[in-house]
Image (cartoon, rainbow, N blue to C red; front, side, top):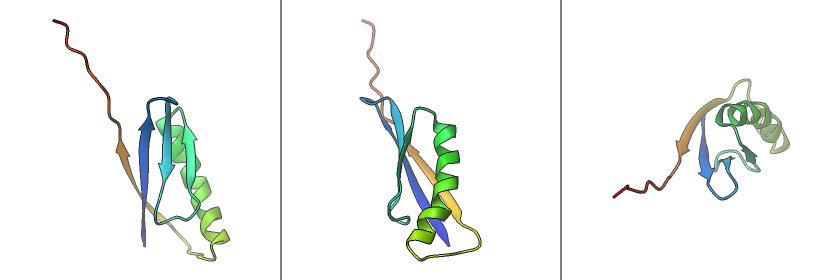
Length: 74
């Protein structure tokens, strides 16, 4: 089964936030996108075990979203 992980940039806090409707309890943040992916990979099996959903492997789909404002010089 595939698990979708949303990675969203929080501009005010200057961190990436990972959440998922597929993984109950997943709410992690990090200033580094790559570090957050590694944290998610470690946390998912633990969270799934806590939710009594044990699989031998978890297929994670990471979807990122970052909105920025660009000001034109004029």
